[in-house]
Structures are given as C-alpha cells and as structure tokens.
Image 1 (cartoon, chains in turn green, cyan):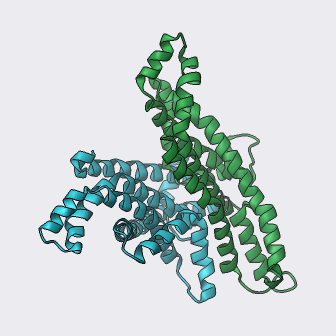
Image 2 (spheres, rainbow over the protein chains, first blue to last red):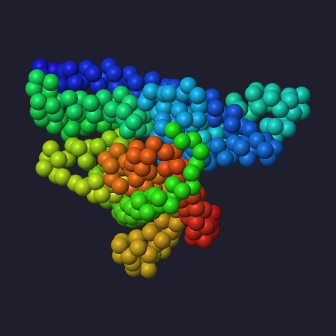
Image 3 (spheres, rainbow over the protein chains, first blue to last red):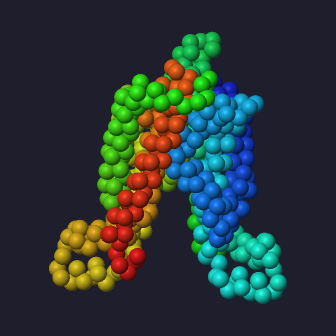
Length: 229
Length: 221
C-alpha cells in the first residue's frame, strides 16, 4: 500500500505527523485543561449574588466569547509581550493561551447554566445537612452539574482541536502549519523539493486527519447528550 | 515599541480601517445570505427526507463541521488552483465563510422544521395545498422562527469567522489592522480590532435578540 505512494509522501507525512500532530494534541490538551480549571470556578461564581465578582467574570466571558478567536491569538502574540515583562511566547504557546481564554469563557457560561439548572431544593437540603457554601457546591451541586456539563465539554474539545490550526497564522508548527511548510518545501526546485505545488493533496490529507479525530468526538457528544440529560 | 495610545494615530489611519470594516461587513452580508439559503434548502431536505439531496446535505454538514475552517480556506485558496480553479481572495472569503455557515444552519433549520407541529402541516394538506405550498406557507414561516435562536448564533459566528481570511490576505478589517501594525509597530490597530469586533458582535446579538423576541412563535417562547 505504502509502496504505491510517490516517494515524496513518506518524509512529508513523517514530519507532519511527528511535529504537527504532536503539537496539535499538546495544544489541545493544554487548552482544554486550562479551560476547565478556569471555567468551572468562574461559572460557579457567576451564580453567586455578589455584583463585583459577577461583573468582572461577566466582562471576562463576554470579551473572550465576543472577539474572533484569531484576533485574540494575534493580540496575545503581538501585544502581550509589550505589556507583560519577559513574556515572549512561541507561536503555539500564544495560540494555546488564546484558545484557553476563549475555551474558559465557554466553559464558564456552560457551568453557570448547569449550576442554575440544579433544583433549589438540592441547595436547601444540603444547607439543612449543615454544609456551608463551599461544601454544598463541592459535594452536592457541582457533581450533579458536571454530568450536564459533559456533552458541551466534548463539543468544546472538538472546537479547540480544530481551532489549534489558527496557530499556523502566526507561524506555529501544528498540523496546518507543518502542512504549509511542507507545501513550501515541495514547491522549491530539486534537490530541495519537487518544483510542484502539492497543496491539494496535503491540505486534503490534513482535513481527513481532522475529520477522523473530530467525527467520533461529535458522535460521543451526541451520545452523552442522550444518555445524561 | 510605543505603549501609550496616541490618538493622532486615528486621524492618520481611519480611512483604510474604515474600508477594511466595510469589506468585513460586505463579506459577512454575502456569507449570511448564503448560509440562510443553504440552511433553508438543506434543512428542508433533511427534515422532509428528500432522497439524494438529504444524504448529500448530511455528508456536507459532517465534512464542514468536522474539519477546521482555516483548512477549508487554505484548500479553496491554495489547493483548488491545482485543478485549474483559481479564486480571488474576495471570492474565497465569502465562499468559505458562507459554506461553513450553511453547514451549521442546515442543522439549525432541520431541528426547526422538525419542531413544526404535524397537525399544522396535515391541516394544510387537507386544505388542498401542494407540498411546496405547505413548505412555503407553514413549514418555512414557523420552522425558521423556531430555529431563530440557534441560527442567530451561527450568523454571529459567521461575522467573527470573516477575520480568518487574514490568512489569505483579503483586505478586511483584521488584515488592514495587522498591515498597519507591521508598518508602524504600533498597538493601536489591535485596540481598533478589539473595540470594533466587540461592538459589532455585541450590538448584532442585541438587535438579533430583539428581532427573535418579536418573531418568536408564542408556544415555543
């Protein structure tokens, strides 16, 4: 099977998989983790009736959800270093930070909805058992809210994986970025490249790779939606 | 690198920025219209199980939703010329964003059409309406209104996604701002980007929610 492919395919695929796929998965793992760790507390605090924290978190959520993600990433990459001393992120780090800002805003909003969907009696019953605010949320409310949060989290993971490609715009070496580099290399004249444009084949193959990752996850999200809600 | 914001920047660069903004609106408008038409036709084909069209629409939806839009843009702009199809950045801009919005809108409209009460359609058939007449007089007016909240989110996402054509250097707002930044090394273009996109997205969602409340089907509100 592999022997049937032209000889340029093997080194190209090797680079895209080892460098690109690895970076894509690393970025996605970092961004989904940061989104959950920041988003769940933020979303829980959004349900607390204390206007200063609510206003601050609401502003955070509306700004990072309102800006196009590419603009957020460009800001982190180009503007961040001017205001934060010693902050000189590589492209994929800047993109992962941008993805985390966007993702945590999505998680915060979803968590707020999930926490508010838990019946008031659950709060009252927990309070009657002597739980304080922290214990009530940690042991009674959030465990139930997390079940309802699971389908939107899987959907967000698909969004994050697909949007890691935005790092290519600032020169990051994830799947789309490594594909871009290989297309440029193959476009050069021999012995470096082939002197041919292989954009259709390479971008097509990377789209197939994203489809193979995303499609099962969208099915999983739909399945969880049916099972858990 | 100048850190303080200098207001004289705006008197110098407002003209290209305004034109960039107008191009953003232009691409958004074409793409939203396209997403509406694709969504209504494809959603109807899915909901009423029109053979062939329904399956084609299903495959189209999965392909678009399971691949990154940036790669779709690259594919159209850098990939298609290998087949002899050369598109201008402007064409790729509205086409890619419109195709993307259409895929999401098919699902929105499908859900909307399926939520139209069966009794209403049966009543229309009983009155002697043809299938097409039932669709235009019952399915579309009610189904489109039920699907409005989710299709509004798609339209807003379409507007935000027009920023991605920065990757192929179409001269919309993001590209203009980044080009000014590249020449002047100033940060004001990013302030402009942030303020303009947030104002656009927030006011658009506010206005569309008003429209939604006005058009909501009472029993679905």
